[in-house]
Amino acid sequence: MTAQNVTPEQQPMRLRYFQFWILALLAIFGIVWLISDVLTPFVMGIAIAYLFHPAVTYLTTKGVSRTTATLLLLGVFFLILGGLLTAVVPMLADQVAAFVAKLPEYRVTLLERLEPLFRRIYPNFQNNLGIGKLRETMSEHSSEMASIATSVLSGVWQSGQAIMGLIGLIVIMPVVAFYLLRDWPFVLNKVDEALPRNYHKVIVTQMKKVDEVLGAFLRGQIMVCIILGTIYAVGLAMVGLDFGFTLGFVTGLFTFIPYVGNFIGLAGATALALAQFGLSQEILYVFAVFGVGQFLESNLITPKLVGESVGLHPLWIIFAIMVGGTLLGFVGMLLAVPTAAAAGVWLRYAYGRYTESTYYKARDPKPKAKA
Image 1 (cartoon, rainbow, N blue to C red):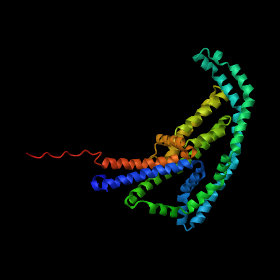
Image 2 (image 1 turned 90 degrees about the horizontal axis):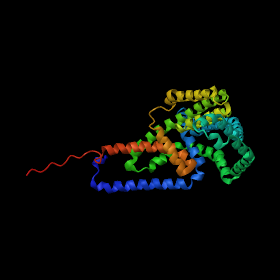
Image 3 (image 1 turned 60 degrees about the horizontal axis):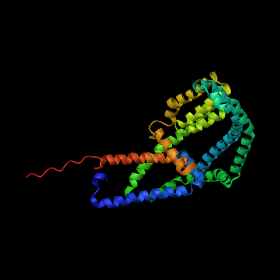
């Protein structure tokens, strides 16, 4: 039924449907907002199940039971993940701790390196800031800063929220992923049965489009983050940049946020290179690492793994992540991309319906009656 064929008698019914869906969405958002503190392991478990669903379905077509396929794939995944975390996390933790300890020294060194440039722009720079005074102040308060940082970290780690969050990630997330992945067809059938019959075909069609967009983006973007993280980590380590491996790895992970992750990584690597090497050719090597990474991402990695037809504009993703983080914190950031994908598909559908309606198309004026 198109918008042009809606009769006056059907308008009140369509209005009630519209009000129902608006209230339902507001109720869902309210519930998510109230329980957002405990949703992280559940959301991550759902994400894992969603990512592995095609692989499990493929194995079932080869005669493997869904339970066996689920156990096999999740077992391999968590074994690999555990091995990587065991190997990488201690090294990352050591580098982060060393970076925090050397941060005051880096700040002073960086200021000294840039002092000649600043003095040209602002002649009274040294008199106003006082490099020696800044170094003396930082030296006096370095032990105090370290003590405060240690106390804060210790308090956060010992808090019940941190412990429950860790338990949730270690225990609850795999359980949610297993049961949801094993029962995926059953869950979909139940959701399908609950859809209103009058709009069943429209909803199913649009949700299939959401699945295509979201699946292509998430699976491809995860591979992009891993590949770029490896390129940046290895490249910055080869340059000889202190903490280059950690910075490159983290930059790769944050490339999930378009433009922002690469910009932060490049800015941090440049600042570290200035503090460590000064104005030397090593800074050019740092630029070269990020230049190679960006070239490969734009021309080879992203087109091959993500494609250009997913319909998720980078600015739309940035906006969704910022809004999700503001409203719901970390859980909101996890839900941002799926919500953005669904909203994009439904907005395109709504716009299509609008362009077909009498609200968009001009009505022909009624011919005047002849006298």
